[in-house]
Each structure stands twice: as structure tokens, then as C-alpha cells.
Image 1 (spheres, rainbow, N blue to C red):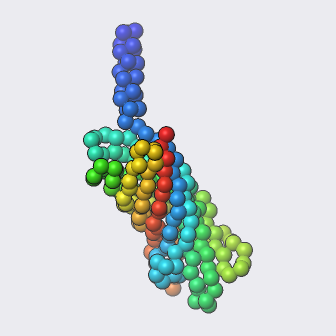
Image 2: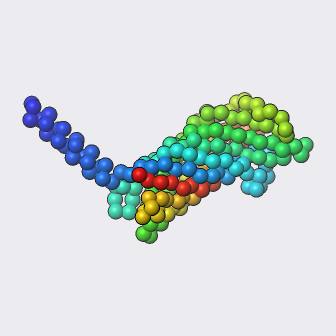
Image 3: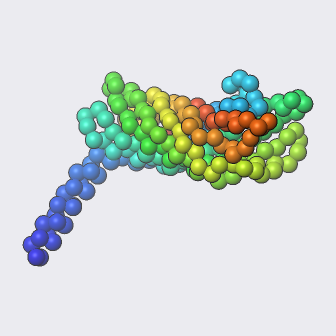
Length: 196
């Protein structure tokens, strides 16, 4: 029995060592340009400038393929002029968890894609110079798809990413004029990361 336990421990350590050799992790941050369909704005020029910051881990599983998972604090939303011409700022604070496949198409250039789940921490809205008030009827969980391009500057342990994210679920649980409106979030993330 002792031999079996020692064999299992040795197998676990060997597996962990192999995985650890292909595992990298680091920090990532950048800016967001976000918008919400059917909320109030018209074109993407009425987006909201925000930011994201968090940690990332990448695990290679083939010569050109890897998994990448991130845990990000992200500020998103939309800024637009309402029907009265008054500036409206919708601010949504999320913890986002994108889980992506990463394919190194050419040398250090990569393509990434996959699902994302977002957990809403706080939703606020301010109109004109008024104070921010909490938005009612927000949906606490958001599911989205992601896709983008990246480049690894390996000699400096840096990498750069551009990611487009589009939500599959409404951010508000409401009805307007008796008709459900799909208020789906979309954003562009420009990121810089450092791997340890």
C-alpha cells in the first residue's frame, strides 16, 4: 500500500512539473471602449471610456495552441445625450472572467477567442451634473463572446492584446412600452500585460 501511495505522489509531482513548465502567468491592464445596444445612444461614437485590470494565466497544450484565463476588474457602460439633450453616463463595474483559446498563427502573433462570464459589482447612472444613482433591475451575471488579436514581446516578457467582446444576455431586466428590448453590452479592450 505504501508503494502505491508513493507511486501516486510521484505521478502527481511529475504531472505538476510538466504542467508548470508550460504554465505562465502575469498581470494585465488597459482601456475599454464600451457601448450598450438599445440603451440611449445611437452610434459607437457614444461609447464610454473605461479601464480593466487584473491577472492572467496561460497554459500551452500543443505546439501553437494554449488556454488563457483572466480575472479582470472592468469599468464599462455608455455615455450619450438623452432625448432632452442632457448628458447621461451609465457606469457598470464588473468582475470579468474570459476563458479563451489562443492560437499562435505566425511567430509571436496570436488569435484568441472564447466565452466570458461577467459578475456585476455595481451599476450607476448620472444625468448632467447630478449625483450618480444606483440603476434598478440590473442583471447580475452577463455572458459574452470574445475574439481578438495579440502579440508577445517575449524578450521583455510583455504582450499586447486587442479584444472585442459582445454580450449574449441583457444587462437590464425591464420592459419599455410593453416590448422587451435587448440591451446587450459590447466593448473593445486594448491591453498590455507582463508575464513573470
